[in-house]
Length: 220
Image (cartoon, rainbow, N blue to C red; front, side, top):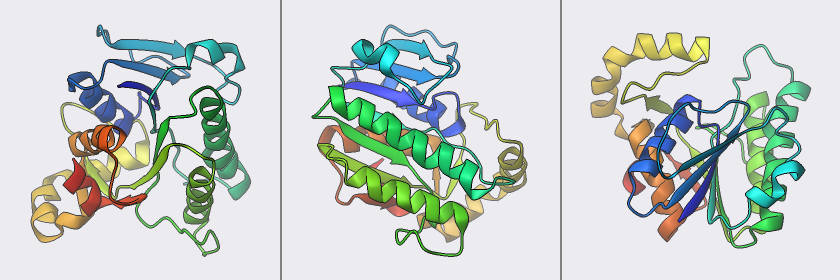
């Protein structure tokens, strides 16, 4: 299986990349982002692209892939809806359309979040925008599309988030992870399970299009 990965330098993306490189069923991984990961591996190729809204310059390099794992995203903290929509919705759908054009049999997996609003009409701005993004991705015509909705993700294997507010929260909650896992196993996951679940969904499918924490953990 050949995979394109967006957001490989983020916390989730780092975990997904690790599991892709470890998997014997993944032959090649192409990361696309504004910066490269700095990793070296025989399976790994990387493209640094300043403007991710236009993939026309690399169209010849993104064909022939089986799946896209879209782990790119930003925190909505301090953002208005217009700016958050531009990054979360417009960028994601633009990338998806460009990939589908040259990979009609591709599986697309999008990292959304627990609490996403599928009606796209609720009070929470980020949940509305994520919900609209999910809904429109599912209508594009991919061979398969899965919306991953993780909640609390434990970073493993030395992986760290670059988002300051998340880094603070993970630092505070890290000692509580064993307790959270024991009392609420359906609401916590980790970077290994997310990555393994994505590989499994791309290879063999998933039982539903929207995967919450419990589904991610079962699949991973």
